[in-house]
Length: 454
Ligand SMILES: Cc1cc2nc3c(=O)[nH]c(=O)nc-3n(C[C@H](O)[C@H](O)[C@H](O)COP(=O)(O)OP(=O)(O)OC[C@H]3O[C@@H](n4cnc5c(N)ncnc54)[C@H](O)[C@@H]3O)c2cc1C
Image 1 (cartoon, rainbow, N blue to C red):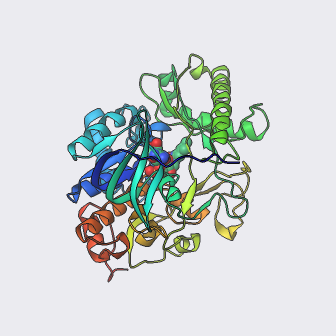
Image 2 (image 1 turned 135 degrees about the horizontal axis):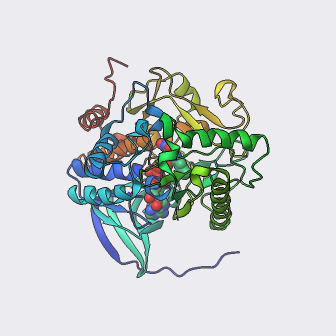
Image 3 (image 1 turned 90 degrees about the horizontal axis):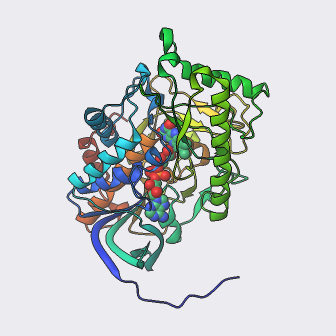
């Protein structure tokens, strides 16, 4: 059944060169890079703060998997990491984890960053409709308290994580695992205060990591009696003041991240698990006997959602063979992290054999890398749109590497420069000069191989 809405005029709120929709890692990469190319940029964000999952799901130790590897953060991510550390420190009592930052201070820093770059940011700006003219977007519609308002741009970049703008423009997409379309679980993270930091780190040990290990063993032995199907317990920063800034545990399975009924069910289900894990930790560990729930993440976070149909679909075979692309816009250490969509946590964690059963986690090994082509950012069927972040064109397992936060920022940078070159050249993003795009990305600190070196 459907209701019919009468056509109405939508007031035009603003115009710009490049409009970026979604202020997470990819959106920041896109907006800052386009602004640095001299573009007039507007960034729309449905929440009240920037950072996407870093700030909304407390993912503060984004590049943990680069520790003890030859790889370093690149481009805008490296800059943010450095400047956040310089301005706010990181009060991390676990000394090996110095690159983690507080996502609350990150919110403050990102406000400053976008203002320094001359980007117009509009918060509370949900976009779920576009006005098309042929195969181009004429404007997007922002749902505001004053009713729908339109914003028009010469180029658009969708960094919503869910490809909401591409979807509204009619771009085809895949979602979830090939076959059953199940996505990875949604998670509501939490913060705990009142931990006994001194005791947790006594005698050079890392009590939190030990608790994580013990938890997994107890869960597998059926001793925890917890309802949440997640079996492991990753902890984030531990501060000298006794805050555990990120507990990534509470998972709801089988949700469609774009369905409001599933989202509503998932938020409530996850909050029951938040209370369960808090209570379990408090009663089980002496070092945690005084803990309180300091905060519950404002919104359920997802690791995957829609993935657009683009000019090139990145596959696991490409990543495994480190396939070289003439239009490469990002190179990243080979790594996969997929929470089993069906909560089946057994399996050996490997992508070998491509049975893809269970939780897949492949560490960064030696100097193995994979490349992302610009064509994976170009949606099929819409002329003036680029897509960046976790929703680019990729298969499901490939996405579990593509979703890495610092890589989402890099694909954002590729889209930001691509859109800027399209504005300058009065052409479509698919027609920009690839050599120039790659040169600009190198100048922004990305390590793009030259054709001769490829
Ligand atoms: C619990 C959890 C733990 C994780 N741990 C790690 C980790 O340790 N390391 C790592 O690298 N990755 C991790 N990830 C994955 C990572 O967070 C995501 O893959 C990454 O944030 C994706 O970046 P993005 O910019 O594509 O999307 P997002 O971070 O989701 O940002 C999208 C932004 O767009 C906004 N938005 C969405 N729709 C609209 C709309 N229609 N209109 C306007 N604004 C909109 C959102 O509010 C958000 O700010 C984790 C994810 C979760 C949920």
